Length: 182
Ligand code: IMP
Ligand code: MG
Image 1: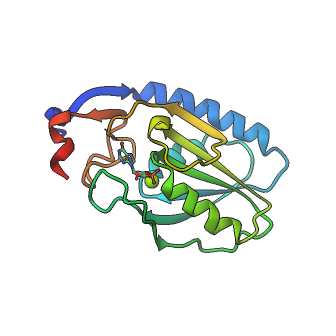
Image 2: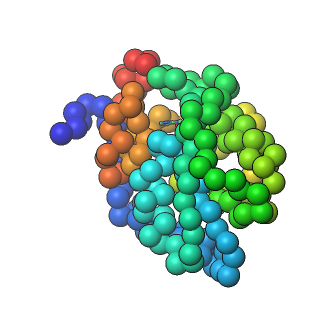
């Protein structure tokens, strides 16, 4: 199915992903015990993550989706963020937990946080599967981090390379010869 020449290495195996997601789910379940919880998934990269994470969360919770665009088709953040799909419901007075696939420069999330704060949620926290801390350009307070990863372009488990390969069950590093192709 997958052309292996795209992949330089497997960075995080499927088993390692699932083990860490189980830990995150347990932590979130403890932190939100007895409280209202709305998981806000940022499309499309976080769909696999939220699907697995919510099954590890043992407290009642609702989910909703937003779609943003920051990268166009390429690999380099423009800093410009566009809302392509907004939430279905108001979040005033609710405990909102943003579920993201990856934080890179931080532009997307810092914009999203500012936009959502205006709607006066009771609390607003961030859970990201992957964190590229060395690439951060704007500071965003992250409450739950799955894995800190090096500054490499990754794909799989929701993350795309030119909209493809989101279905890989692991996180892989894109082979360097493909970096410039988008
Ligand atoms: P930021 O605004 O630079 O933090 O961009 C975050 C978004 O860029 C993520 O939600 C991804 O959609 C995308 N992105 C950043 N790094 C990667 C990567 O290594 N692989 C795939 N997508 C990435
Ligand atoms: Mg994303």
